[in-house]
Length: 393
Picture 1 (cartoon, one colour):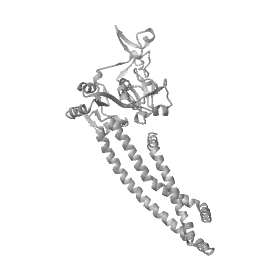
Picture 2 (tube, one colour; picture 1 turned 180 degrees about the vertical axis):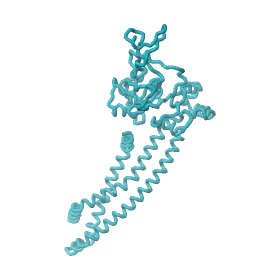
Picture 3 (cartoon, rainbow, N blue to C red; picture 1 turned 45 degrees about the vertical axis):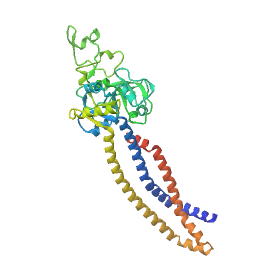
Picture 4 (cartoon, rainbow, N blue to C red; picture 1 turned 90 degrees about the vertical axis):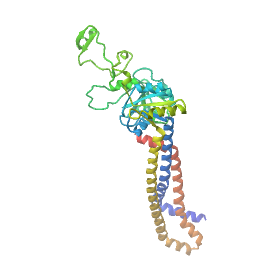
């Protein structure tokens, strides 16, 4: 029997390139359907878990899908906005705690999320280094943002302008990093969290001016009438909030009319959730309330349908690959006809000749199954994380 294995090993070594190609093809077509199934199921599980933790979202009229995905992942286009006064209405209802979100801006592609400490508590986000947001201009970074941008506590992150040509003269805001979050393995790892008022400063709804009531600033004054000072265009808007200029920052108009992207209501119980849902369903047209799990499940139904079509396509490719592999093995056996004749002439039995021919096929199938199993295990353990990092990159 050892002679049979020796001869088989020598044959495999001589034809290793052909057998490697066959092994790679069979491994790939056997791994792909299972890998796709695993990644889709993991993605569906993550989407459902995040949606279930945020069963309701309140926003301006528009696409329920965009509102849900924006509030859960902060990755949609600039949404329609709600007035800040809507936050007080949710709180006054007595049915839920109201958490504001304003995710219009970003810093180098990382969403800047204006909210409050209640959001971090709701998502159970823990500070790894530093502290929570305390004053205007503070920023807390998700774990992935801090790693990608190589930032730590005490560094600064600058908001990206919405347009290259900003005729309104709203400058990017330089924000101080005061905290880094522990990895949550969620979209929160890719976000920058600031106070809601900081996002209003980024938008230009709040600003600070340099002190003009002193001798050093006389050249910048056009007119002075008592306490009323009119300055020329050389007065700078601050693009950084510091301890020295924080008192000069102010907002014009009514805070209740300032924009927010959405409200996450956290109902106190199931009854409160039902009552709040009924209250806002009566006000459809002015605002909308969406059930995140329902919206996400509808999205997943579409994803599963697409997956089924892709799996069918891969299965057809797999069948074609199997036919080609069988053809290669058949032709290989035809080419080895002389080898079988020689083995029979020197006394090899039919069983020995059969084993010698079969080891080629068995070895290819065994190695393919081994590598396919390793790839499936790796996909189940790391596939979704690698896919998310690839998509974010």
